[in-house]
Image (cartoon, rainbow, N blue to C red):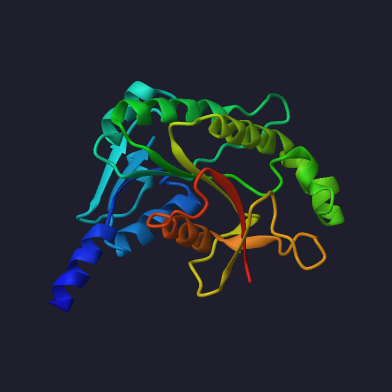
Length: 233
């Protein structure tokens, strides 16, 4: 009887997941961990040849992330959308990829009747949130990536106004290309994780740990319709 109950729990925990940005560095960790956990994954990519993963529970499809019509067929039947999309900064023009793609994604979710999305942005997306960051970050790094952060913030504000979709924004600091660790993940509802003095705690987290945290939200009501900054202890 106990084994049957555990089997039912495991089946309930397994989900059908569509991953955007699956060929990116964080996205690849996300896809691999999701498959290891027994989920069925649809990787929605621009170039299928860039995803060097093969698995019975993995389907790789090509779509235009800026077109709701292109996405909706791949969203149908999914339990949740996870996004690790990233767009490079530009010194000559505004970055628009985050907000424009999210509008298409939300439109496709509505047509496909998918209600849950978990997406990734960054610490310091709100312009005033970096005033307590270390000197080099505040005066060198943040100005360099401000166009990216601005568009991430525009995307976040769009989600805040989206009442019919259950969303979560995960905000990591700098990213390191490291697999998931066993470290405790610290969380804070805001634009960075503060230490005991209120200053930012930490400056980078492994991409594998970001993926680990995003997947931990699949069967949790934590951080629904909220942005959460993360760091590792």
